[in-house]
Image (cartoon, rainbow, N blue to C red; front, side, top):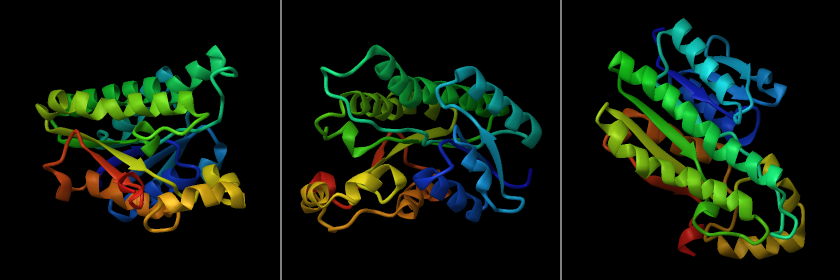
Length: 242
């Protein structure tokens, strides 16, 4: 493969789709995955291949990395983007919902990192990993206990792993989106009352676009960021500073 190879999870819609397209434009060959078969709608001849993958399925993730690496000569970059949100009060939260949230946002991504890192270390190759965290890992919102906790755990992986992976010339960072105009936020953006509570928190007075978040991911995977590891880039329009 004459291009670097990147795996992007949760790539059927929104930020993940924008990441897959941006990385393909930047010269990567992209393996785009999603639990939603809409991922197959990617149209980028010769630059993107698609796979159905449940991010919580560790065995399937391991097999995917082995397949891609075996056919293409290795995996050079990983974007752990797959995720979802839902609202549950502490009174409503069930064990299965808690476990699923952690499996998708923490357990699955961690073992994808492990599998990609093993491939990079075996080849003696440099590489880069980006985890898509959230401002909710830093500033919580009521009713999102399990989402905030899961994103907080994912957020902790980059500083925890940066020293270990750095010895092998592998970098790991986070991008923490704020309020982004995607399918996930459509209900809130369509509700004038809910929107009126959020917009005052945004110094830029607007939701970000998915391609703006993808640009942050592309930067952290690029050679321009080769001195950056263990860090979090907040793509939040100033939310955390407000």
